[in-house]
Image 1 (cartoon, helix red, strand yellow):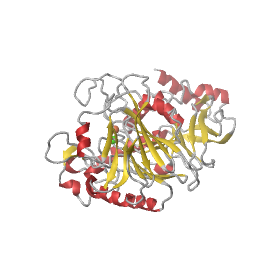
Image 2 (cartoon, rainbow, N blue to C red):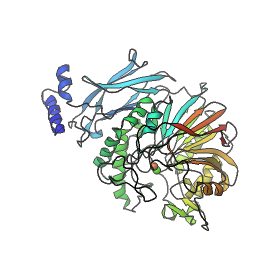
Image 3 (cartoon, protein in one colour):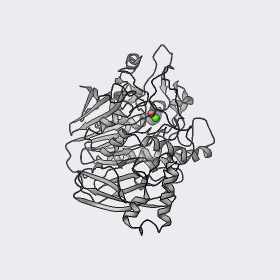
Image 4 (cartoon, rainbow, N blue to C red):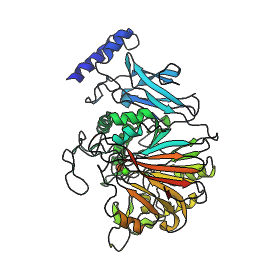
Length: 519
Ligand code: FE
Ligand code: CA
């Protein structure tokens, strides 16, 4: 009801002579009968001279066009060096286009390195909330500390985003989001857990299983309304990579779960990529083209950390052994299998060889440790076929390339648990070449427990694995030239609001020694 009224009002403003020629007061009053910045703001892909700033005009989240007219609309933006916007250092006007669901992505440049900035959007009299983003220190310049967070896996139905509210207060330079920003499942008003038992109802998705561009857009709209998520975006710039659920569970390349024709799945993937781009603060270099997207990229934080963001989906060969948690089959040792694909592997190798910083952080999606998941007396190893554990050749090749740097930390998501361990060659029996931190989920999996059942048996079978934890939260990393410290920050519940944050475990890695120390 209200949306048809607001759309009429909007169209009236255009018919009356267009946006720019209308008197300012008239424009401001007629344009939006409801607040247009309801989805908040975001910044992303920080560099030494700037970052991307994002918003999407959406005065009516229930309307399939967000309550917007099917026309381009001007949006003003400004960036200041102070939180009160006394010193505006960059500003301009960009266009929110109907083709992109009235989202805007401004690549702000020309800023100073290694300092905070604040940004906001304006249209007529309407003003967005204020966001904060830090530029990176210039490559090679001295940086003696970095704090950032690792987060992802935020199934909206499984819990409140309380952890994001806490993350917003951590004073991070940036956030790495490893994916599963949305989940593609249909509305589940009668929830039950992995154990098959009913669990507390928190909130339900709208709509059916996602297939079309409109479906994916609707899901992002619903999730972007969450105030805790908005707070975390407003607090720092994010580096974002999608994982599987932005498209469909466990997809790789053009292969979906149901084995549908690849040209059919390509259309769904293209719709999903477009909606992802529309809702994330990504640069133009990640603009989806003919259904593909540039996801792997790099950022160098002064002389301290070289960050390599990987894409473990688009170029991966099909999961062996028919996917899932399975007993290992011959496909696991297929010498031709790929996880990153040849081009991305060569790119990573070139990056590493430049030795651009004291530490290398490999920020990616699925677990590298070849974990044997047996919890009983099964005769052969069970592995997660949707992880590096099921791709022996690419994994061992990666580890052999990491060997000798003694400064590599791998940051991972996907598991909905915290795992910390060492990456050892030869199926986990050889030399440690790096450390891996698998961050838990923001909400996926629900409240969880301090430890999942049978964890002790998994640790006993996998000596390279040093820690597991099953609470929701995020990973907080503090890096200095000598020491990398990671904390598992967790909340005791996500099915009730307002849970406090605490540190479940703290780990350190000493530069020059690829070993995990539990503090
Ligand atoms: Fe997930
Ligand atoms: Ca995943």
